[in-house]
Length: 130
Image (cartoon, rainbow, N blue to C red):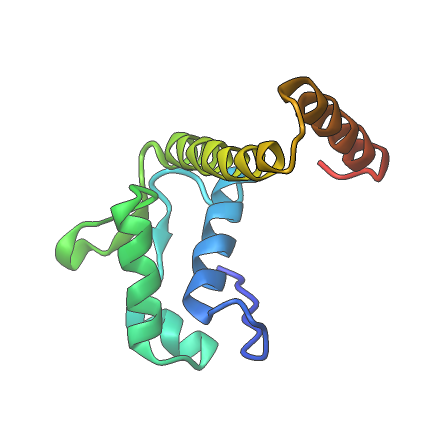
């Protein structure tokens, strides 16, 4: 597994691990059932404290992206892509709710917010983002 950790980044290292494993699952580079390195092995490969990797693995296990099978190891969960899609959708609703509330407090109407959102999506697509 090829993870790139930037210790100088403002994003915590354990979150970088989570994000990169989830992205690998979403992109099909890690398929359900794929074994993952042990905590000690990944910590050694990345020159990190094992507690940092353990924290990332715990979060991924809680969100059902990975499964730990005792001495058999840790694997990508059978429904990891679905779990990630569900979580991303939930996060999007939460973020949109917070943003919509803020914009409505500034006096924008729902139709103005919807138009602004559509414009933002067009802008992102025009820039070639996924």
